Image 1 (cartoon, rainbow, N blue to C red):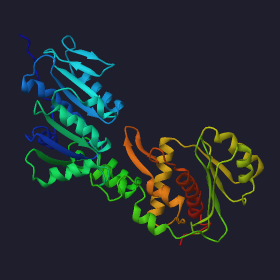
Image 2 (image 1 turned 180 degrees about the vertical axis):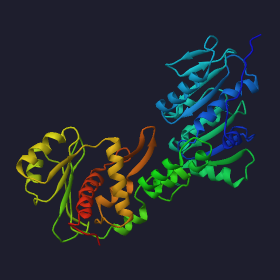
Image 3 (image 1 turned 45 degrees about the vertical axis):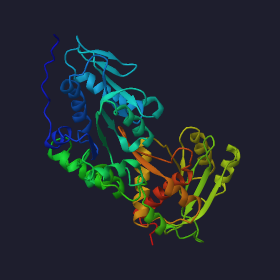
Image 4 (image 1 turned 90 degrees about the horizontal axis):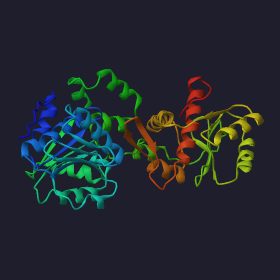
Length: 399
């Protein structure tokens, strides 16, 4: 008879409280970098052993996209010490233990692909970032087996099914559900993250972003980094004063070129949004007043910036990457929340309200929702970035 020797790895008190919770469904809202993935990999590993599953039966790890499922798969694969009796299918993300039980790591991108199987236990990772239809599909796979499911993820506003499920579990009305919450400060106490890193993040990030990602507190604004109430307060019309700086986001593919000028008080006083060929775009930029100008120089924007620099001074390029965009958008968020940048109603305000952030392995990703544009947001951020530099030097002042 095949036997598996197993010793549970060390866990913090809050990790043990979650994975040892007897409720059929546990919902955990967690800050980033709290060890939630590690603890739930341990839980999933233990389930076939506790239930004495038979060959061909399976447990699942479900994540919003394939890449996230692959991360968990590789972590569990690396934790299996005796590879002689384990099989690994790196293409299908399936581990098979010595008892022929399957550990499947699945993507929730296409909910229809989750139907059909009988699953004895499941982890739904980053459930707040997945579609509700994926949970509906996963739920059907647990019906015949009466399998357990553990939901883990970062908080992502209040306008989603994940938040509603967490509130249902938190209220305690349904004995099948229980609720847990992990903050970054708990993780620091357990040694998963440094206190200094939390405080630095608090200084670096907009308040709404910090509270969601580090304190697991859902905001009314959801994933909007600026804050709807702050956007409304800063929407006061267009200024008649002269521009002291410009921010320009250049069109790519089906996007728009946007030119935004700010006056000495940080209020939009010049706004253009158009789709033209590169020659017409360069000519439109060249005739702008010769004040400090920052232009998106990413990709095809680089030669445009070089041509404009030959024609006039006070022009600098800005290359957008995930890191640089995060930095400049966080600066704009602080500016809006401190009412240092003002703008009119219309497309600028609409784009600001639609803009969102999401946490990734490499940082915070800022972007417009799929199918929408963020050209006005980028131009405003470029303009405000250069406006801040002038303000710090004492050349201009805010209202």
